[in-house]
Image (cartoon, rainbow, N blue to C red):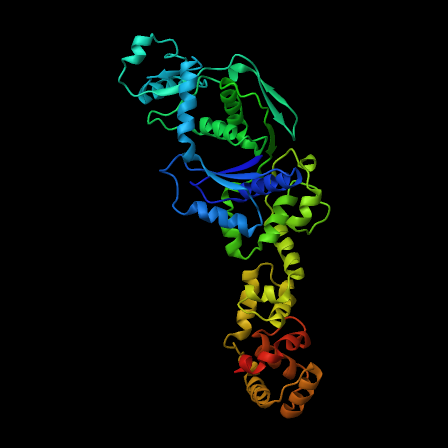
Length: 423
């Protein structure tokens, strides 16, 4: 079983989507289920409706999952396991106030030291704990043995026990802390492998320690994905709104820091060759130009009618027309602007105003011509316009520009709209 966990406090960024894609690919290859866990423990930071937004994004990108679990539904298990640890003396009640802890933190900071909790409440007499009415947290006792992380990318990593203090697992309001909730949730879901961002390694140490204290013997494997530099500033929703296709985004995110079999591929194709063995150990930089290139390539192979829908039509001819403009546009939004300009009122330069007026009248009165050469011959005969005085006015009327793709190709896909365009 694999899982992808997501907080409702932020939009989905490209780093999140990349990790979700990797989880999905590995789950499919291993014939394991993928669980989506919505980490909604912190209600104050949650954004209403974001869970559905996330799930809709998964559907858009073709990420299939077996179930959705809301972390808040497991609160009773978190509480029960915290009580178990207290009963077994593997955790203790801490009555240290936030003000006192902040004072200790500032003292350590002034001495240029890292603050570590000194277990002030660990050995309090039972009567001071039972009869104490002050607010308290629950802290897990620090480890006595080394902690090993089984990392599929960089190999197993061992940490000395003194890297972890007696940290809080239950807040004063009796809600679980992030790491305690995650550790318990992974136990409840029988997770066998966790693919996550590299910046979660410190959290992993605490989560492994929690499971060890709870007597959980299953060894969970990890795969830490090196970050994309500045990934938290690039939202998936933002890229979609800019006109990047889901197929292109996933193509790029799977490729970056990796060695795919070929440059352009689909998610279905990636299932056959994807492996963690080729993932780079170093962070990689997001390259918008490369994403735009990949986006262009996916638009080139897209069904023409489907492409036309991105520019406001449902016509294969308009889709093929849009494809012509891929030399000048790299996103569906840029393509839509190109096509919209064709159907917009024409911006006619004064130097060609007379020629345009003459040609416009001839086109409106012209019969339908399937071939451009026949159309050209007819308009030439009716207007007497030749060379630049023919080509430039015609291009202005058909494309709203004085230069661009071959006019014969343009006519081929616009002939059914020609009267509408020139009016």
